[in-house]
Amino acid sequence: MSMYSISRREAIVQISMRCQRQNSEAFLSRISSDRGNDMRVKKVLLRTLVSIPLLVCAGGLQAQTAQNSAHAIPKTSEQVYKNIQVLKGVPADQFIPAMQFIAASLGVQCDFCHIENAFDKDDKETKQTARKMMRMMFTINKDNFEGHQEVTCFACHRGARKPLIIPSVNQDDVKVAEEEKTRPEETTGLPAAEQIVAKYLQAIGGAEAVAKISTRIQKGTLTVGAKSFPVEVLAQAPARRITTVGFPGGDSVTGINGAEGWLSTAGRAPHEMGPSELDAAKLDAELFFPTYLKQIFRELRVQKRELLNGKQAYVVLGIRERQLPVELYFDEESGLLLRMQRYTETPVGRNPTQIEFADYRSEGGVKTPFRWTVARPNGRFTIQIEQMQQSIPIEENRFAKPTVAPPSS
Image (tube, rainbow, N blue to C red; front, side):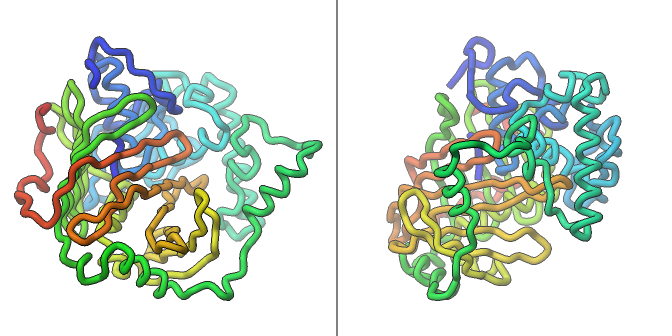
């Protein structure tokens, strides 16, 4: 799943997304500043190309140049970033998602705690307070919940800098609505997960027809805010996917080829995905070939029935080996998959990524979503497919990781 014209030096790009004014993570922060506002758009999009938009300010923490390889020994946060006081021992690929979780929980941007271009400094009192709050949170979970992550930043802050400590007045309607959202529903009377999946496969054309789809070439437009960019998606079952976003200053590419994934921009060596990035990209790629649904999840559990965009939907929990569960929303009437929600683990809480599927069209006897919207706490984007080809050969070298980033198209 990917985030994907404007002049690289002359156009002024304004996107209403949190963190757009900050530096990106280590890989993105190495991009030359002379690319101007167009480059800032690339940073925002690349952070979400694998649906993990990392808190951009952490890029200024002066990450070391060693790349994260899925086959290398994982580095810890203090080995990659400077002046780490609380999150020592945490895998480096979880560090920036943790910063993003904190920012979303408080409704703030990077400069609330950090000094731009000097992120390792301790000049701001808010940074010291954040460290105290994290230590307090870890202690609460350790002493009261056997170390399980029951209390997080969001549990108290709810998107505000200061938690509310006094109940609100005249909020009966809001209170009831919130209770309805959180109230557990009975699962009795709901169909079994196997029935829901079978109806889904039948709704999109039948298991036999779906199994015949081996490749897809899709071209369309990615829209974020008021700006649109051309996008091409190459996919081959079960888990090969190349997404290219076109910019006047050069293409941005996200690739996954089975066990390895990468991100690249024109003129730069590819950045290898860390474990959490790779898992997210692989899951997104596999779900676009529904034949593999039962192979992705070792168990499927029906959770509840929920109203989603005016439609009743069954919420099915997908259980995977050594990974966080995934929530799948199937239209009760049509059987189509409407939404997937997955999570990225961080030491301070789980970051959600929500992908909604729409505009299903039948091509070659199989229905495919021609529009999907990816949303996270710090923004969203939509991909609208305009052309699609299926089950045609794709050159093997299109899925090979480049040694340097491709030139602009």
